[in-house]
Length: 303
Image (tube, rainbow, N blue to C red; front, top):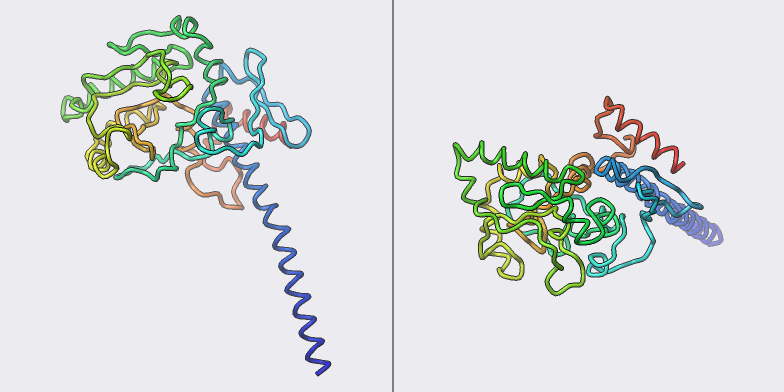
C-alpha cells in the first residue's frame, strides 16, 4: 500500500510539473506572436505611408511609437482594452491593424464582428490628409466627378482604378455596378457617431448604390445575394490599387471602397498563418532593398 501511495504522489507531482511548464510556456508563445504581429503591422504602416512615418521609438520595454514627419508620436498599443465601438472612436494602431483583410473572394455577408479597416486612427489620417476641412480641401482634386485627396497617392490610385474599369467595361457589364458614382469627398461625420467619415479625408468613394448595399438598409440575406453577384473583377481592380471593399465587413457597405494601403499590404503579405520556423516577414519580397532596410530598422529598434 505504501508503494502504491508513493507512486500516486509521484504521478501527481509529475502532472503538476507538466501543467506548470505549460502555463509558463503559453504566455511566451502568445507574447512571441504579439511581437511578430507588431513588427508586421509597423512594416505595413511604414510601407503604406512612406512620406509621413519616418522612424520608430521604443520606450522602456512595452511602449512602441511611430514617429511622424511632423514630430508627433503615435503609440502602437496603449494596452487599453476596448469594445468595438470604443475602437471605432478612439482605437490605437494595434486595434486598426488587428483584423486581416481577406484578399480572396467572399460570397456572403461576414460575421458582425469582422470589419478589417473599419477602425481608423484619426491622428494618422490627420497627419497624412489634413487636420481640418481647409487643409484637406487644399489637397482635393477631381477624378471625373469624384473629389479625392492627392496626398499619399490616393487620387493617383483612383485614376488607375477608373482607367482599368473603363478598359474592362469594353467587354463586360462592369460599368453597371460603377456609374453613376454616389460620392467621394464629403467633409461629414459618420451618421449617428461623433467621428469623421473616411469620405471627409478624401479617401473613400461610393459606387452606384443598391437598396441591399448598406447594413442599416438591408437584411444580411439580401446583402449576401448582392455580394455573390458583385463582379469579382471590379473588386480585384480596387484591391490592386490599395482600396479595401466595405462588402467584406460584417457591417457591410457594399458600394464603399476606401484607400487603405496599410490594410491591403497586411492582407497581401501576412494573410497566411505563421509557421514558427519562418522569419516574421515571410511573404515579403526580400529582393527589394527598400523593404529590407525597413525590416532591419524595425528589428534594430525593437530588439
